Image (cartoon, rainbow, N blue to C red; front, top):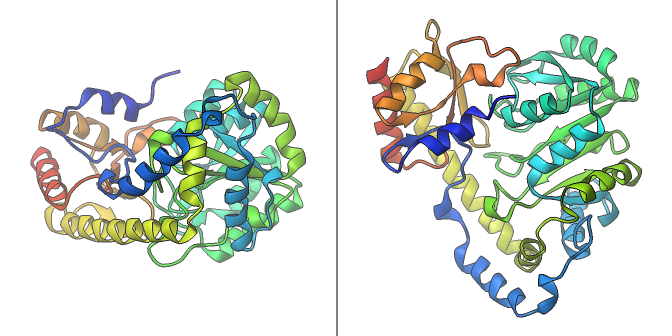
Length: 367
């Protein structure tokens, strides 16, 4: 096992470094006043400091379940397990499926890959195209593994969004094999034009849908969840209780108070979408001007822009960039075998317009 390249980078840089590395939200968009008011209100209640139930407080699970139901995916609080961020959700699932074979996109999320390695899952990579996985490769792999981990909405790292046709094809393959889908969905609310229907909604008995408030509200709350059939959640509860008994109760109560006003949360989400769309467009425009050889597509949402500097070792390049105090994540970190390539993942949400332009100019000077 090795530590996450991204976490190591975040620890080694200083305030002068322009970072396009971590998937950090823009803290200027955190709804500070509303969160402060919600916090003041709940802190007066002594019960919030007490132990709570392992699967999460009922009110929060109901609020999350209602959002699924309103989107056409019937869900009750019994279908929701609150976790300490979606990273813990993945760990619980990896522990449950320990030592099994699993089909994943390639490239894929580094944090998930590390968890799978730690729990002995044998990852089978399937090429990720611009509209989702290569369906023939996916079918061949899934027929053997019967288990898959996918990020269909603004994928990390590639920012790919699965087409409606590809979602249906994937769902049909999983259903035909009576297999299991782990659908990671931290970015689905960060769409620029429209929200796509989850693959899990087509497979309510054969899926685990993972969500989080880290990208939409505040990472520091460390509150995520798993949405699944009640029978599928039961064995996960045993693993959850062996890890931490329950996720932070104070965070859950604050979130409950804040989420009671649904319109307020929706307005906040729209502010994020508008800001991130502007940033993504600007980042892409600056790339075309400053590093025109970087091949990429404008994302449709999420937090990342991904592309390729053909003929360049992006891992070697980032070492030079660190000296100039600018950093990104080289694409080889998102592959099972980590073979050097020219691919790069940029985060555009956390930097200012000035930092974006300056950071890309510094990378160009290193090239």
